[in-house]
Length: 175
Image (cartoon, rainbow, N blue to C red; front, side):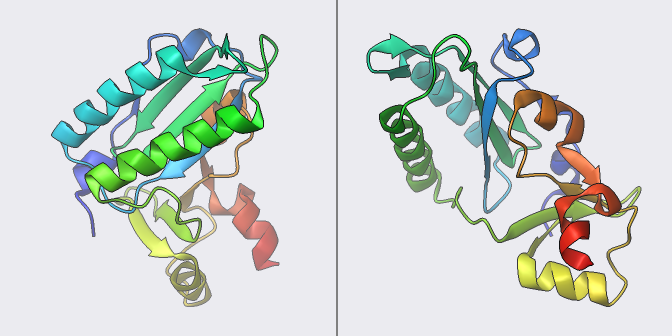
């Protein structure tokens, strides 16, 4: 179990424009394989600020913002109504996040990792198969929270980044 206090942090947006970025901005969500230390969060924020200032698609700067949540989750958003991200710019983001992962020795690309918590409890991580075993045994309830890594827009992330199991895509899979 990770440091539960750090996982209960509110949304940390070091990028000042997160709140004003369009709700329709496209998002990419990356979950770290472990909790980052305060020093690692600060170093990651510094690198993100530099990357976001220079991130472009075909030479056109992208209107983008990012958030680090709970020392575990990186959410990057682009307002594609201003200028869309291109395949090359998305590749650049992927390589950037991979580079942070190599530096910090974390995996940001494990899509089988589920962050969840019972009401009033601490956030826990489980591999997908272990999460389903917990649900089957009754240790994950319908009113437990799960992290929604499938959000497509900033608005979706802001409203539904944390969802009750019963309202999540996991519940659809459970049926």
